[in-house]
Amino acid sequence: MSNYPSDVNLNIGASGYAFLIRLYNLLKRNGYFPATDKDINALPIVKSSKEDTCAICLENYTDEASELPCKHIFHTQCIHMWLKQRGICPVCRQPINI
Image (cartoon, rainbow, N blue to C red; front, side, top):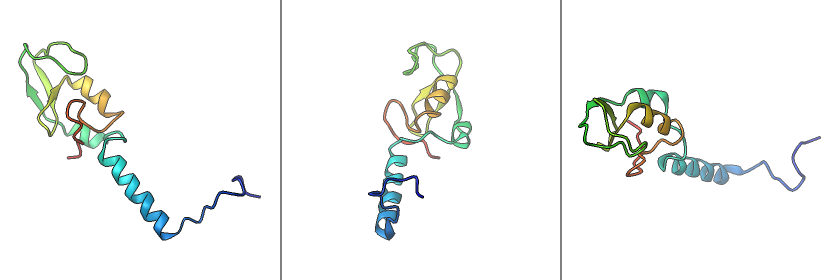
């Protein structure tokens, strides 16, 4: 006995599978999945100006910050927490896949 309702067809076929793969890739490219630990840990640490403000917490930088591939910088702790939820820059929405 199946746990699925009788009107659900689990045999999606090749075209259905191809559609799901395209949908997955679209969602991933648009940042609907978290960044990997590898990508997060690969972000370079840069010197930051104390006059600049982190766009996530709105606090001034101290000394160092993490830089995304799009060149936006954030407090390292702030951007790590953000990227663990969504794999895109919070400013320009560019995916961070390195």
